[in-house]
Length: 279
Image 1 (tube, rainbow, N blue to C red):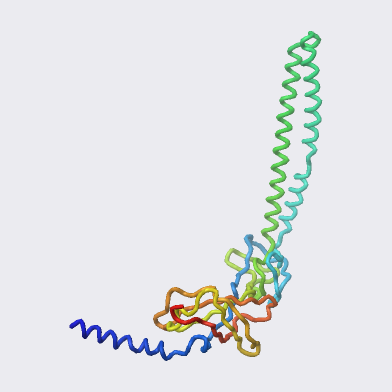
Image 2 (image 1 turned 90 degrees about the vertical axis):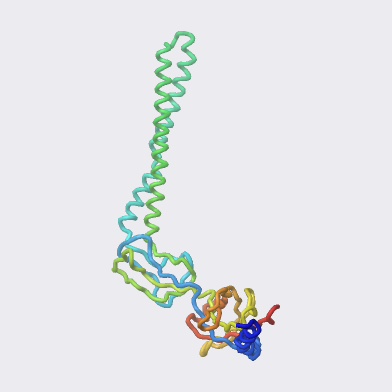
């Protein structure tokens, strides 16, 4: 094909897209459909297995990160913890070995002083030294056993902690999947928690506006009724991959919701301040 004709055809094919870009209203004058979604949804489980013994929250309750929401049955684990703690605080053997070691050290010192004057034999001195060394080793063994008991107490405490059901986020309980008395296996979650502060606002913008929205821009979000109102959100993601089928690219904004007054899952409209192409 002649090069001039090829250039002409390419110009014809490109003309509709160019005209569409020219005919499109400025981004600051156009509303886009959006959805307000949870920042994340957590299927809360436990690192341990067992029967659910207690649940302190239900659907719709607000929870905070680190809050204990319930626990699995932990009667056996708590008994083991009490036993381990009792062993961990028992330092009787250490005290006894220290007292005996102090006595044997004094005994050796006296024998060592008297051996030169022939009042005490070398053999008696050596026996006193050996007794002192043996007792020092016994003290060391007792100290190691006591340290091991303290570690076992920490381990038992960790096992009990694994039986607790603790929220990893600030959010709202969406549903309870298990009830008290049911068994949690390695496939089952206990409840679902949605983090809704902040909310994520998801919007798909036509490709003709690509480059007019950047990270840090502000979007004015208007939730549908009955919530209504206008709330400012900040752009945190602009997709680098455009969906060719729909001719759009995705934008994510973060919308503060400290009082949890805005629900997730709500449709909305959004308008960007925008900027001119090339700026």
